[in-house]
Image 1: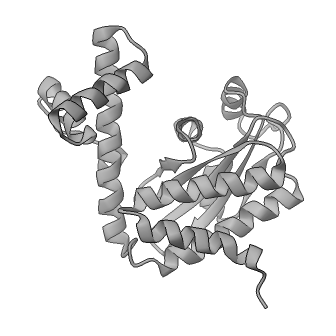
Image 2: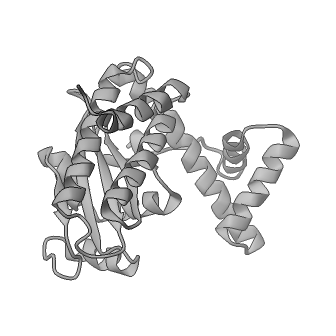
Length: 244
């Protein structure tokens, strides 16, 4: 008889899938569950981001927190690391200790500055045209022991099966359109916050609060208000990594 504890991640993922309105929302839920599961196994806080490779290059699409996404974007900016190598080779890759790993000196330096001491990339094969990876980050070295590694890989296996069962994720083309729209929204919001920060000399959190108030007062979606602001300033529509 299957162990109920083994089935729990699958049931949780399927529950998120049923309620998700788009692929990014599902992947955000997946990242949160992955972070919680691996944190429990590690006995320490572990963050998780989801990297997706659809067309030309890996792109950060979701995370268990904003910080997790920012850490994943460091790896994307450097252009290589455990997550990107995991996608390339379709096999998990670990940095056990950033102070001792010689493979990516620029990445490990920037990780150390961000208080990341160890990292693990675990690939997810969605289909022939798309792949994803879970990118885990820990603030201590040696966190990804054999037991924690097995937990992360096992969770990725559950996520892989759920992705394949999903009619909400659909075909590769519908996923690409869904994710592109979500990335455009995120890009617009980030750019609008930058404009507000420059104009008001405020923090990112304060800029987001201003943008949110405008959205609420106008009874319009946050992404629409952000896109309108950027288009008024630039005279052009929002572009993302997918447009390159």
